[in-house]
Image (cartoon, rainbow, N blue to C red; front, side, top):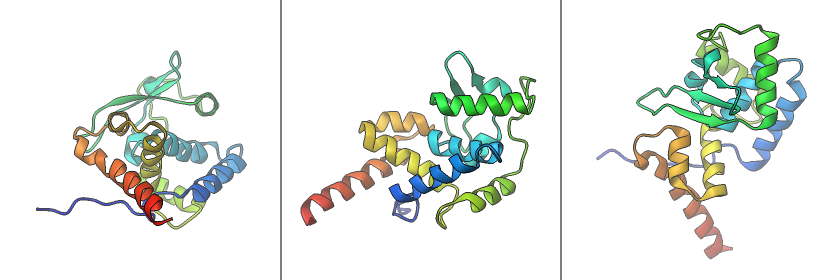
Length: 179
């Protein structure tokens, strides 16, 4: 039997690292709107890198201020709400770059370029995928709703999502017992 994937602090951003990333993105968003928007979307939606790179103009729902994510790797498609600030940033980017055709890709860059962008802005030497884990852990801590985390990540199987509940639970319980 294959061992189950396990989380540890090297696979997601700790609070100070996340806060530092948010400061960096806020500082550079006027100068490098695309790069900062891509990283913000990863952090605030939990979408995989390639899912974000596949986003087309028609995937933005201006009425609901949400983003439609087409799942990859066997994931479900899903529609995720964007905060008012993030939605405004997204619309500014679309308008500035005159992205109007419905099937036009919003971010016309390669995965390797996206990874390079992450390496320029990252507050710590963690992988780009750590943004997805950060989102999932925070959503679970906020809601304690594993089904909501499953939906947001597009997991078809709840077992894949359980790593977040297991990790948060074990960390919190150990902290109670030891401290």
